[in-house]
Image 1 (cartoon, rainbow, N blue to C red):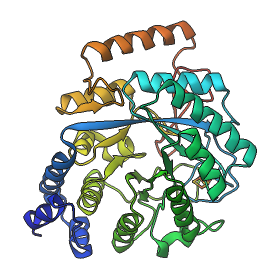
Image 2: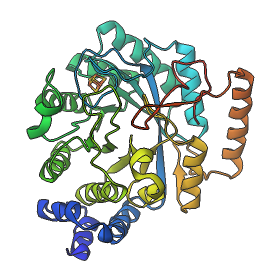
Image 3: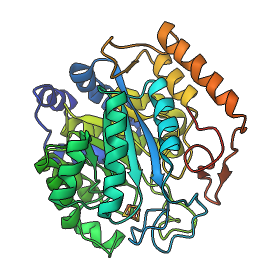
Image 4: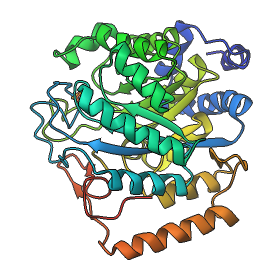
Length: 380
Ligand code: SF4
């Protein structure tokens, strides 16, 4: 494996070859750290030591009519997750303010379902417009399922500058994980968002029984789609979902998958998304060496490590939080950020709801029981 050649290619903004991507995936665990170091050189070249924090707000949870087998919110899922219809405007406002106060430069507004009705779209567009007016430099990513041109245009007009719609897996593997829609349906929605002038956020989920070739296929398909932001999820095998028995990932394998993604997409935002804590475990800090983006706090239906620990990990690794603030980058633990934290903590204390304690499902996944859709204090 010629890592030096791969780094040279990637530093020029080009992708490594498919054969090289496969070599990385198939490398021994003992070679993982040199691979991470190589991907780290590329990450530092394009993004320095900055980390973008994304904050998820689950507007509507569960009860989706689609049957994506990896998803705890899908039709037929018996996962014991929070299920609720739309958050109130006040709940959305509170969640967004907490995320922003803790350094998030992107808020991700997510609603379960096949796609929004016109009424739902208008509701989300109103939320986006309000957030955009209050935080003009904040990135607003929406994730609402399938879109047509008209709905994409409405979101763009409201101020959604990014749309998330993951390819999830390779075209060859798609029918194994979902039968209520196709891979091409997903590609079409990413293209629709782009036609409306919205930046494409699209990624994958590893650990769903795909082959290594299929992982490379989806990595290169995302390059063809010109995705600007690429979330890399590691399957959370929720009890009550068809994929609950899938345990294919190790911390080292996850790090090689992330490194492969960095070397295929040298100058794109690579985000370590759901499954980071569950699969990468004590090696989590190494994620920052490869990825320039993570989620702060909890995920849609599972809990992440505490937002405080996310920020400490960034600081301890010598990275810093990139903010959307025109005043420039700020570091956790210093001045403004610390004051923001104190203000938010005071606000949380006034809520006096007590911290929700998560529940582990049988596979050890911490089910989200706090934040959006609950009376419990969110994880920031
Ligand atoms: S469409 Fe989205 S919310 Fe619905 S089952 Fe699939 S991944 Fe889950």
